[in-house]
Length: 347
Image 1 (cartoon, rainbow, N blue to C red):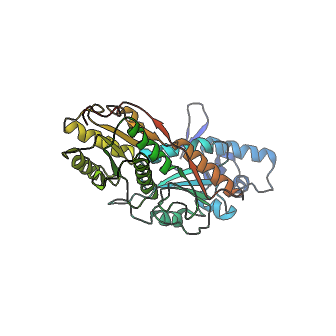
Image 2 (image 1 turned 60 degrees about the horizontal axis):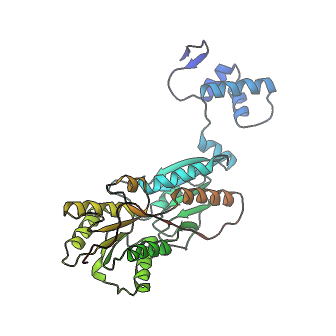
Image 3 (image 1 turned 90 degrees about the vertical axis):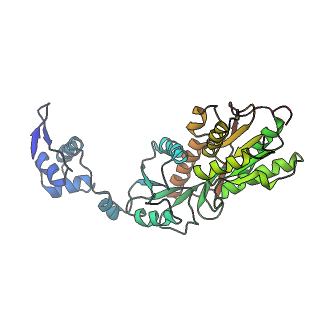
């Protein structure tokens, strides 16, 4: 039912605006509205103008699925994530910024299911969205090798490393070297590492960089100082407690991501250890929580916004029929804050 707005113009009651509503407000037939919104010929300029004014005033939108089936194009890019957490949200900010002016809209889609994320979520998501809702996809941390799809795909931080679609990631090995080398330069020699997820290539590469820096400094690798954190709060807390209650506990911990490092800070506080006077802690990512922690977390800052922005640009190039590199690696930067300091005297 129509009502009259405060400015005296007709308005519709709450509900989805239909093509019949537009036709009624514009005083034309439904086929005429269909011609206008689908860009077909046979409509007088004055009628076209009137219909488009009503479309704008009522907020009418054609069915995206129906339109895409007709045009075989939606002008929508999908961003597929396992879940919305600090890492993926920061990437989304970069993707959104880079999308401005490209003519593409964004659809952020989470595959989080009851009980958690299951391997292969990205394949199921692509089968639902590809072709009818999105023209291309950016997949954040895919769990499996993405097969050839009907739409272009760019992966960020893929589990499988260089295999699969075009991918963009941080230079994880070099960043882990820098993090570990910084702790060594502060005088630390008993440096522990809390690993990330064992199935994730980037986490494996961070352990590689940790080991390489120890070797370069002539420090023997001690497997007793490495624990699995799996990017899970409970597992990280258990790993940190095991390390920090050892008789020969480490004087520094390099965690594979910031959330794990923040977990180490919490356990250290529970045990009465001062950071950085008794223990230095360094993370990886530079999510917003790192700068808000007490003490503020030293970390290797991934260029999360730029990772997202460059992934968007790569995908737009692919959609335009252009070639893009198979893999792009961006450098991470050491951000020194309050959680690291010189090795304690007598250690």
